[in-house]
Each structure stands twice: as structure tokens, then as C-alpha cells.
Length: 120
Image (cartoon, rainbow, N blue to C red; front, top):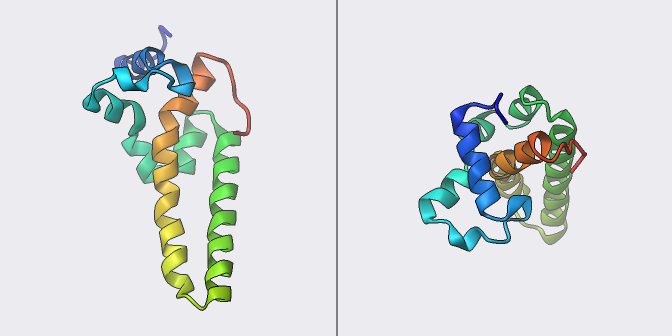
């Protein structure tokens, strides 16, 4: 982990303290530490592009495909129920970046520490 920046080393330390990528001991962290562990602002802004730049292109493709499929499914269900499908598809569009934001630190930990670069 010597090639990582100080901020990534702190994040990885928090993940390790929380029990690894499963986060089995996350309750031992403070609220601020938990926020730093979960939140990645650049992933929120750039989503799949951030993942690609960080060398996680497989996960970028997989998460993007899942988000697109979920948005289409929500629009289809809304159409069947007679609900405004635009509102549901907007919800899917807003949830997509949040998913990347919340997964980025854990996924990068898996790539760098555990040497995993799988699809999900």
C-alpha cells in the first residue's frame, strides 16, 4: 500500500478496522469515520468514468448495466401501474451516482488489497 496516497491509506485503514469489505465491525467506527468510509465525492460526480480511471472498468460496466436495467424495470412497472414513469426514471437517474459513490471505496479496497477485479 506504499504507492497509495495518504487519504487512500486512511480509507483503507478504516475499512480494515471495520472488518474488511464485509464491514462486519462497522459499528465500532464513529459517525464521521463511517461517512469517510462510505462517501466518495469524485465517484458521485463522475460515476463509471471514475471507476474506469481507477482501473475498475469491469465493475463500472456491471454497475452501469444494473442501474440501466433497474431504471428500465421501474419505468416498465410504472407504465403497468399507470404511475408517472418519468418520476421513477428520474429516481433511477439520481440513485445511480449514489450507488457509485457508496461502493467506490470498498471496490477500490478489493482491487488494491485483495487483488479482486471481478464484475461485482
